[in-house]
Length: 276
Image (cartoon, rainbow, N blue to C red):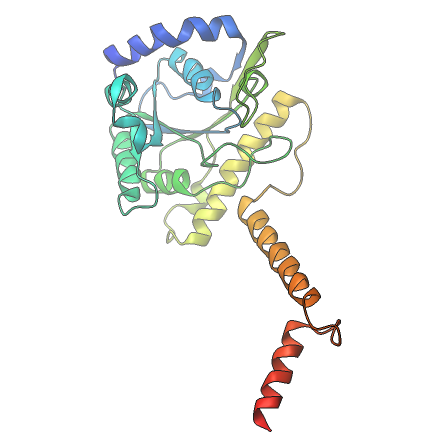
C-alpha cells in the first residue's frame, strides 16, 4: 500500500516551522524505526503543551511518514491557517454535533488509504498535576479495531518546559530539549472480532494509554502514579463538594430555633404538618 506524498503544503509548513523549532528546542528523538515503512497506521501521542503538536509533527515529518491530525473544525475555516490545514490533509472534528462521527470515518478512510493518522487520545492538554497522561477517549481504539492497523504509542516531553500547559508566555532560557520516543505497536489482538461495546473500547484505550505512559516513564526516568487522572471523576467530585457546601449554607440560614435541621428533615416535617 503506498504512503502519502508529502506534497506542497506540508513542505511549505516545514519551511516555516522547522527553523524556529530548531532554534528553540534541542532534540532527543528515538524509536523512529518503529514507524511502519508502508501502509496505514495510527500514532497515539500524549499532550502537555500547545507547542507539542509542532514538536511531534517535526519528529514525525522526519520519519518520512507525515501525520494527519484530528483538529478542531474552526481551524479550517479562514485565512492562511485554514488553507494550510486543508492543504496538509488534516481532519476536522466537529465537536458536540452529529458531524463528530465524520472525523472517525475520515480517519478510517485515511488509514485504509495507507496514511498515518495522529491521535491525542486525551482529547485535550493533560490536567494531571504532574503532567502524566490522563484517561483517554476511545476514538483511537475505535479506528484501530475497525481497521486492525498498527497503533504506535508516542511519548513526548520538553515542549511543555518551553510552554507549560495553559501558560501564556514561553520559558526560553535555558534552551529546552524535545524528547520524543516511539514504541513498538500496541498489541490489541485480544480485542479483535469482539463487539465494540463502550466497555471494550475503554479497555482497549487503557491498553494504549498504558503504553504511552510507560514510554513517558522512560523519558522522565520516574514512575507515573498508579491511578490515572480522570477529569470526569474530578468534575463529579467538584460537583459533590459544591452540592455539600450549598446544603450547609442553606442549613445555616434556617430559623434560630432549628440550627441543626437538615434539608431532608425539614422536608419531612413539612409533609407531616400538611398531613394533620
